[in-house]
Image (tube, rainbow, N blue to C red):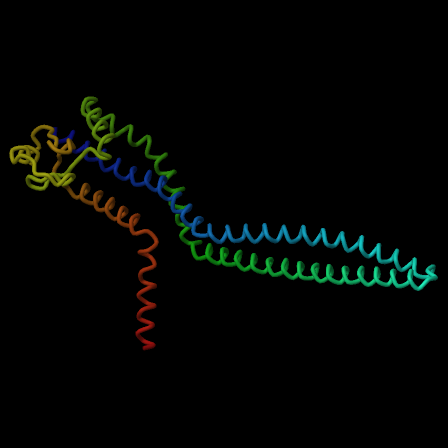
Length: 273
């Protein structure tokens, strides 16, 4: 029985490590999405500016086409001028010429203004794109680390598939089914005992059960969380510490890495004061 329990512990430790790698494959892509979402507002601004620029470019083209037609009209009026003989005809033509020239001047001003707006919008778009580029550069190390961890986790999980088969082969089928059933419900199937306390659910177990577990007599489960109870050892403790470390790191996220920088800024302000 003791050897079976030890084999069960080895499987538990193995599964806990694989679960961490699977969590990486599940959670790390979300972090990449969060990084991209950090620039979502800037991309929306760029899209809005580009739509506005497109509308202005279309308006400018329309005005340029109108200018071409109006200039042709003006040239046609000028060609009529030498053929006019009466003062009334000359006066009417001059009014037409003046009106056409005024229209052309106004439209040319509009075309110039459109050009300036297009150039200004292009500058704004380039500035925001530079902000995104600079921002992504700040995340470059984190992105590279995430991609490396994902690749490593995927490779490790694939490599460990065969190792798990060897571990489960050494366990009785009924015990393995029980282990897998509990693991499916509770994420992990083993719980260490600390005196008469189940360390998984922090509930007190019957003292007699704790004594039997300590002596390695039989297979016992927690009456509250139904996990298989085992005595602690160095390997189990280290596995749980690693789970706790990685869980805390995942919860803390990037904010933990930024904390020292904030402290340095406060110290710098204090020094200046």
